[in-house]
Image 1 (cartoon, rainbow, N blue to C red):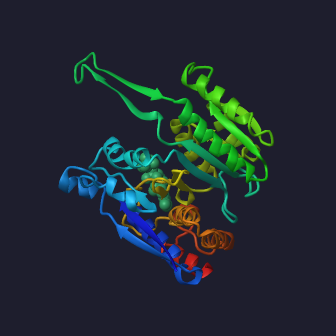
Image 2: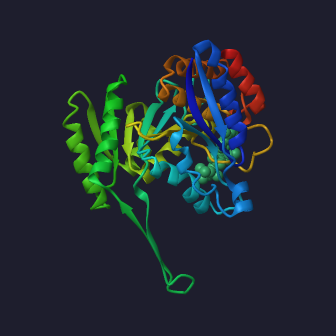
Image 3: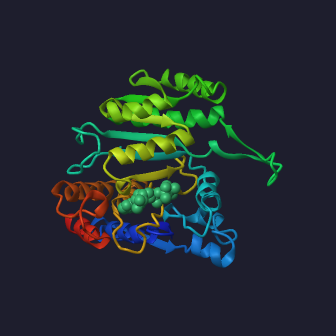
Length: 352
Ligand code: ATP
């Protein structure tokens, strides 16, 4: 029996609700597929912050190093400013464990309706390879004259050749495994004349090593418009941290709901644990009501199984999701139905 060490961080709001669903679905395959998940839960998040003045216990993030993967719900609550929850928990994990690829599939699942008129699953099948450790979210900058009328803040985007190259290389390798063999680079080198010029140069260099892949370069605003008007022309997107963040919320929205989109924060070298999470946040407006759509978390669980080498189990989870959405009998309110998180989880378990 293959055994995998998993750190589960349910977090805040609907995070615990959807993570429980995700664990129930992936654990249901243990016996059948011959693996065991050894899962330890960490109670970090906003509640922990209100009790201890920090989101994570001291040395907590470092203690995750021994795990093969981290399965994460969501963080964020009214009581804790967002920049604290993000900078004390999510971004340090991504940076400390060099999870330099944020992989975000954006696919219209069968049976779901896109807000884009006349578009079906064949038209919307993209994946964003978002830079995850530097760029606009490097954390460089500061305040001057804090609290006085002349207050000033600056935020320095930091791009390194090595950081861009390894990310873009991953994107091209991924494009090789997909039928359309297209890479769209999200740039803005007309206005950002340093960072994005370096980005373009490195993208061109990497593209030169992949003659079987077609590179298309778009300014990020034009790419956003294209995702709406011609989503069928977009396949793999390589993007900086900020651009990828924005484009993938758009991608999730055109795929029917923020509630279905998964993500993997990957260290492709496998020296450090990778982290898997739904892309949505803690959704305080629906937390505690038992109506959150668990599909994003379940699909993130499938990405985790794939990363752990449990490819068959991962494929079974994705097929179960597709079966349930295609049948359309069980739909949570975000998909226009009235099913609960438990109803959806049970439907997924049945479909397995
Ligand atoms: P973040 O800044 O962390 O992305 P946010 O507050 O901007 O978080 P979300 O928490 O993701 O955004 O919520 C945005 C909207 O999407 C809310 O109305 C929320 O109810 C809805 N939503 C998010 N996730 C789900 C889900 N799994 N099921 C149903 N609705 C969801």
